[in-house]
Image (cartoon, rainbow, N blue to C red; front, side):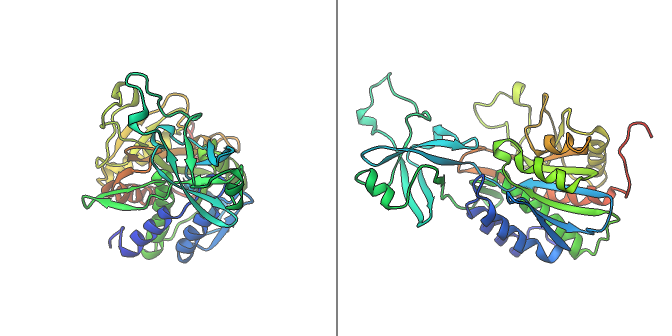
Amino acid sequence: MSILDKKALTFLEDYLNNAAPTGYESGGQKIWMDYLKPYVDEFITDVYGTAVGVINPEAEYKVVIEGHSDEISWYVNYITDNGLIYVIRNGGSDHQIAPSKWVNIHTKKGIVEGVFGWPAIHTRKNGKEEVPKIENIFIDIGAKDKKEVEEMGVHVGCVITYPDTFKVLNKDKFLCRAIDNRAGGFMIAQVARLLKENNVKLPFGLYITNSVQEEVGLRGAEMITQTIKPNVAIVTDVCHDTSTPMINQKIEGQTEIGKGPVISYAPAIQNLLRERIINTAEDKKIPFQRHASSRVTGTDTDAFAYSNGGVASALISLPLRYMHTTVEMVHRDDVENVIKLIYETVQSIKEGETFSYFG
């Protein structure tokens, strides 16, 4: 059985191409839930849009597998008298990649297209060129003045996304904006699918969790963990491929696309759960890499770990190139191997396991 069959890849493309910026994830969540529906017993949702597919909802012991559903974006912040638009971040949007990019401004009247403009090279002074900064990048929607901008439905607070869509590069590299981290939602959905198709019966409740608002501080995970109150959480997110230029591996570590899932070491990572994941990878001959994080992982793992008096939590990451750009790149083999590693690890967990150091 192929993990990434035609139906799965169609779902991945549709899911990535749909805009779901932080705070506006509901459209993407509906696509995700529609795909997941045949593989779970019920859904939980909350008022901010986190969605959870549940297998064995009556079970007292609860295991979470989690990704986050939101993507970085911009907000309209200021409209000039001559109809140009200045922005602020919604999440960690990169100002340096903005110039010359197309954008979609989401309004009640529908999508308004625009571009991040930039002065022509002829008009810039050698040696004194301005670099893109949050205060000097701007969007042009072809309006003659502020009144026309507002008539088009654009106002302060409108959210702005990039329209870049899914592509496959050289047969096995997946490219798109928002792979961080809708790839996570995709991968945990495939775990649910494999459990169902292989008729695996779990002795506990499995909560396939697609959290919102990770990009602004793990907020969706903070909320939903209080609702679920899990015993174990296995989180999947992306991490950096550090093999490309201008990255210092002595600082960032050594991880690379195509070489397997990345297993994290950090204070929030419960050591016994992490060792279970490593043992599973070794037993099932799933390639993996290691990464250490100082103080925090910067992922939803931290939110789950420190909730509800402490939840045994671990992080399995998908190595990715060019994070927070519109050409985020991952390797097909890594996607498959993250799915396999979560799928096999989940089956190794026994009902009532405490992952206690003290017996």
